[in-house]
Image (tube, rainbow, N blue to C red; front, side):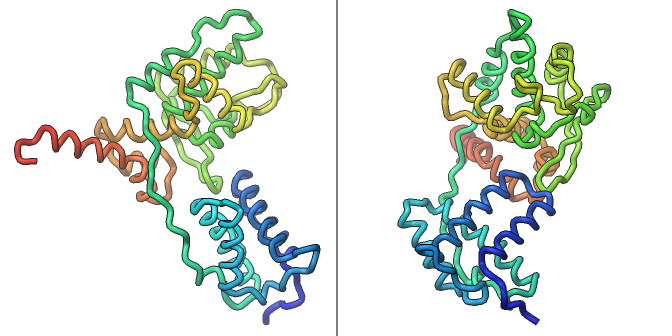
Length: 304
């Protein structure tokens, strides 16, 4: 039997609570909360009560999407909001609030399949080699050693920024050079790290402030470093060493995957290292390498 005596805002709140129990990342939960807040507000003009969940149909969903476009949202932004609504209405179906999801009848806006430019191995090595090696004063030694470790793990391990800041000291097997990484949905995987990352880790652990904090990477207050702080750190060095303000932590993960493929690594192995559930997601990272191979073929093969 369907539950009809409920409100849109109340069900949105229950849905967001379910996301927290499902161990979804804080970033995902915040995005869903922002999109649902906008959705509820759109159907609550001047403080009026919005329609009940059972009163929604595909036309109302499209009305909300049209309002998003009117506000200047791009196709990818509207597609993300529609994805949040689909998850929300699927939740209502599972909970017996509505018989079927109206969001399933709405087509996803088309988005351009563009990929960011990926750094060459030479550019990546120049960036990492350009990081400060002279720690200078004792006060600056630990932060500089930490920053070098950040770059070595992002590029050397292909980690997501959320995975990086979630690392604890106990996640490292320094003898066999393995890291236990908690990825999306709290799925764990083992990722190897190389000699340079190992050296950077050893150096940082020598200088890391004494604290009971289990987190690997610490801020100036001896708390866990945040993803936003890592983004600022990466951008600061990218601007100083390469003059490129567009570089971000994911650029290093992208370079990690692309360079592995260029050197002959198996696509399935790259998928495992990146923690992708689907091979198609991994192929997106390697598309640029495949395009470069085609250019080389066209230039070099006598029958091209």
